[in-house]
Length: 88
Image (cartoon, rainbow, N blue to C red; front, side, top):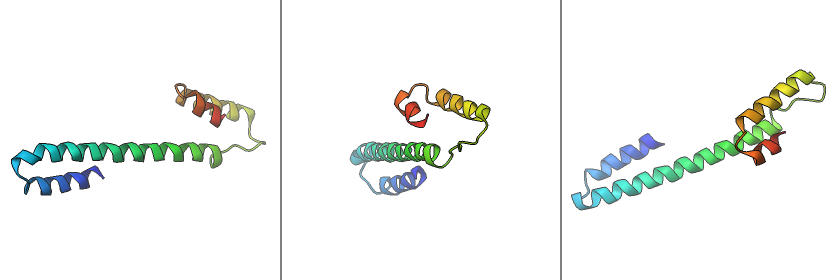
């Protein structure tokens, strides 16, 4: 994604007047950051979905395994109590 936008930026910068180059670079950087943030948010939501609905231990699972999985989840989401609560 970023490589494609960098290539687009390089193509446009070669044709823009010097006075507009800084503005274009700044706008392009902001756009990349917005895309990256949206992508990361969607990946995080998918990860939560997968952990809650795909990678689920059934009721017959070994209690030690269930405890280990819960500890792993707690350690990964220690700073996100709402997320941790949803998963446990």
